[in-house]
Length: 488
Image (cartoon, rainbow, N blue to C red; front, side, top):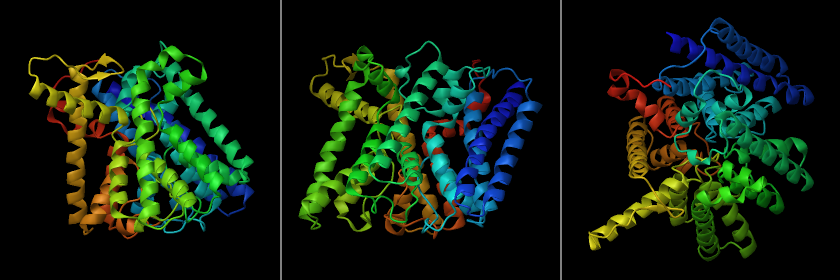
């Protein structure tokens, strides 16, 4: 019961944060006089009141005792955030269906970018800002945001951190306290946001547009305030956004060390960075060549669209420099594979993460060498250091669970009446956090035509993808309930 009380207390703190952020949407509502100020105030006040009530009622719970309850807390937290995140859509009348509102809210909170809106430019300013805001704080991870803002929560913060982001590169801790590490990375996140808002403003973009575009791209989210995503921006602005997306895929601890001149701490992630940048460069070159040779693009347009779109896919952002639904089929399938890879561990990107892909590739290479030279000792190495067998096993388990969940998701969507192509595209897009799928849900399309059951399945997949499957799947393991959990 103590753990249950603590979970409710923590959920109260999270809802208070969400309520305050929701009330921030009053600024554009009043500034643009879009007629939604009352609805936004009601949504924010209700969320804040529920959070305050939980915080006060269960304020006596001082600590979380069992390790497994950290997983329960994280899953419940994201689910509750998505449920309350529906309120601005429902109270303003922009979405009338609860399932549609849940889909949109979950997509925002998990920084996925899939949407049920076929057009967004008609939406009130407050709702547009709420969509951008959910992706901005969802991209960093609301758990990490709470740990940064509330230094004394009476919990093993490192356990909660790893439960929320099982793919994070935990070797990136730079401080003796987890809260300090989180504050440092949050500082980098806020700094990058401010820098790219300024750069977009200097390029001629209005402040309102610059804030929304930065929020949704620095978070690897992909929501847009334009119907055609990035297509209407100037060429220079598209390259600025591409730089923001590329940096969002770099480990934030590495960026902190780079900004604070701790060069000695960078070597532990250099191979991941090299793999990530090489993938971006090689795939960009292939896409640019395909645009010129197969689709008749001019060299300048091909270079811009190819680079921006490849970076968007690799970082699982989902912003579009052009309508990609009609692009050459091999490019489309390359994008599917790239979105499954994702950026570096410890970044805002989704996918399986470059570190896992690199370890898996080297493990396959090691296995082939061992077949040829069975007596040779050739461990898998990362940054010159042998990778523990436990870590390699965990990586293989992540790939296997990811594949199994994708298979089940595709089957469920087809049972819900979605054709095979769209089912595959939607599952990969939701699991990786990329957003746009294949067929009518790809390119500038949306998920509005999906059935109610299919939207619920996609919402669950977005949640599982954001928590990288294991955090959610572990709740269904019989051992989770049978075995006595270790204490924190």
